[in-house]
Image (cartoon, protein in one colour):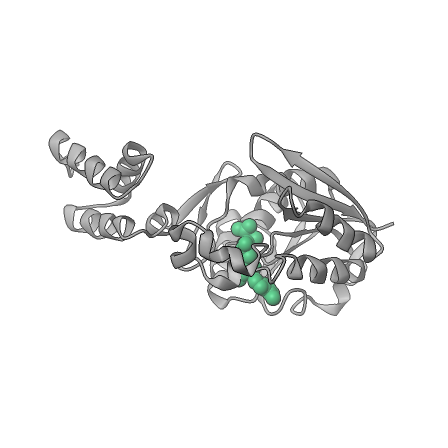
Length: 262
Ligand SMILES: C[S@@+](CC[C@H](N)C(=O)[O-])C[C@H]1O[C@@H](n2cnc3c(N)ncnc32)[C@H](O)[C@@H]1O
């Protein structure tokens, strides 16, 4: 197939993206070119990107834990830092995995793929996220379900006391700080995916309170958090009777709380 852009046209695309504030304009131009079949298609995707839509939503996928994960418009783009949650969950091990506030389902899918024979339950309140997660589970060939509802409400009661590992990357941005976020997140990711309440920890407290019901004795909760919130996330886990520790990865810029049920 002949290239859809000459060298000059490709250089102009890079300049257009750079002018719109895309820091990695060369890489983005190459990805947009690769994702499109003709000039009209490329122009349409470029216009969305120049208007500020996250690259991953424009392309329809994000790289996470070494795989391409589908990202539907309006669904939270999985961040590389969440690979710390995956790593800790996989280290905890087991065969029954729950991923709360699953978004695209990226975390749960990565954990399930690394734990052969496991079964995954992914839940989210946003129907668009649940549909996206269902497709990602199917694409990955993971044995599991994507369920819609508030936090742990959609989990089947029979799962109580049987979960080996429960992951949660909930919203954790304090409400007043949403306005300070990059416009890509503010304008294109739903407030439901970002807003963690007054101190950002409303969902962490709810997850901590819910976890003991689902975890088996010795089971593990892994929650993503931030360095300045980590001690309070851990305290919420301790208040729920779990045994938390804070873990971090400087390279990923990631912090998480790993909490054991005794
Ligand atoms: C920060 S995003 C993370 C998504 C995914 N875990 C990831 O790391 O890519 C938080 C997700 O929580 C979901 N959410 C927010 N409040 C919720 C609730 N009460 N119950 C279930 N899901 C909720 C949002 O729809 C969003 O998909």
